[in-house]
Amino acid sequence: CRGVISGGNGAVELLLDMRVDMNVGGIHLGFGLGGGAITKDIEREWAIGADGPAYYRALAAIDALKEKEKRKGTAAAFARLGLADEDVSMESALNATLVLMSAIEKDWTERQRQIAFAMFRNPRGQSGVAEEFNIAQSTVQKSLSTSRYYAYRQGVSLLTAALGEVGGEHV
Image (tube, rainbow, N blue to C red; front, side, top):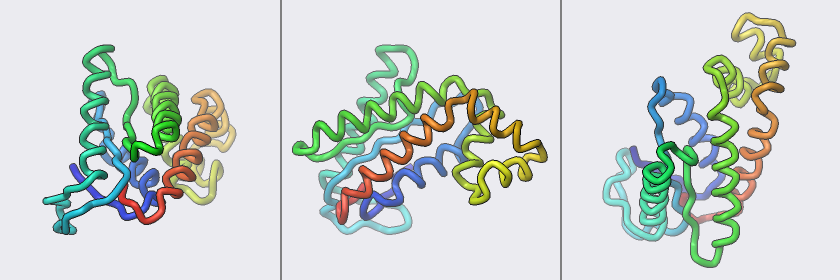
């Protein structure tokens, strides 16, 4: 699956949506994000023909995920980011954030996963999620607390802010 976003503002939201929609029991899906320019016109519906630094950084990010998975026998993160050479310290910090988020998520039960991702979608917060799942708000709160959701949410906020600074570049 390939996609191109102009600017980084929607990248994290799209990544989370894809994680929810593509959650196929036990199958690990990795995502490579590359920041930079796309130098060739692409077919908008398919992202076919993409070329340029952003495209190659995303491919390198996917290769790095595969390599880590081979070495460790398990996925280190659900996504990896590749930025321009001058942004290497930001890239390292954001990739460390993705690893920590993956470590948190790895321990979630299926129900905790459903509740956590529902929190990102539901504008009414805990009460809206409780209503959606027909459970008590205190049950949602307990699930969020025991799953370390709020630490995960801080990672999402950090990634969103940092990728929003990418500006007119592609991610």
